[in-house]
Length: 173
Image 1 (cartoon, helix red, strand yellow):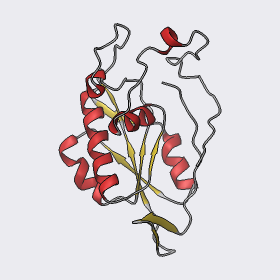
Image 2 (tube, one colour; image 1 turned 90 degrees about the vertical axis):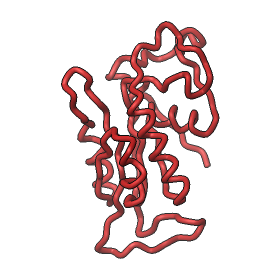
Image 3 (cartoon, one colour; image 1 turned 30 degrees about the horizontal axis):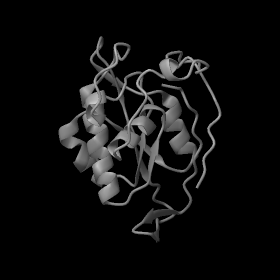
Image 4 (cartoon, one colour; image 1 turned 60 degrees about the vertical axis):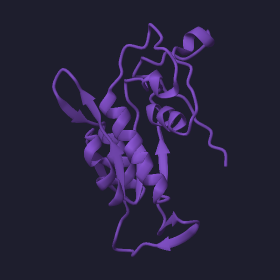
């Protein structure tokens, strides 16, 4: 997992059903951010940078706890979703692969909550941004696969477990 920096901006509209739907200028879009979970403390948490980025882009950040049963209802009330980065891996069972010996952190509630959020967002045609873990889960949700341990496949890979790892991301249409 690479700690990525994402920059995005909300104009006065959100794309829904391939048509721009105007949002009143006094109503900011509600943007859901999937939380992380600390097993040692039993806390949901998320770096404040995510909420600050949403606010700076003109939205209101809404933290999504890892409660799969309420994910669909919460997603229905949101205008967009960010699947945030996480120190855990997407469960290889989700893409029909055996677990690699170096995959040591899987959070079932994170995977399931994120999938239910995606189901709701896609059904309602809401914008979705995946960052690091979120992009991996998005790929798997859309029937893709992953390389479970990148150093096995790419010797010059960045140290993904280092929280200080940063790199540029190029987006293409």
